[in-house]
Length: 100
Image 1 (cartoon, rainbow, N blue to C red):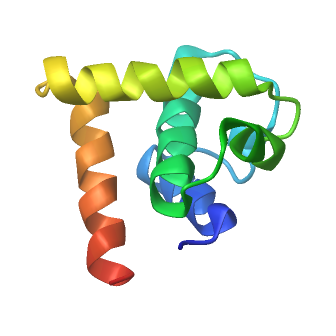
Image 2 (cartoon, helix red, strand yellow):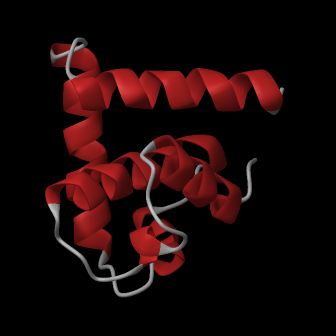
């Protein structure tokens, strides 16, 4: 189990985003994609329900989490060369390495 705030911080660092930008209401593509990755990672590493992930990301609904997680899973299985898929795989391996 990895603290969600650590995951959010590492995703923001990876995508060169300002602190806590993933928790704000912003639909810019870069931020939305990074938020999707962070939501997926929070769910993946903590086995949270969609509602628990939504509660972690303020002002988000569980349906947003479902959509974002499906988006990332689809990329991981069908478009492995997509930059977002590559970023997700790098972050997963980074967390698995540090938090064994």
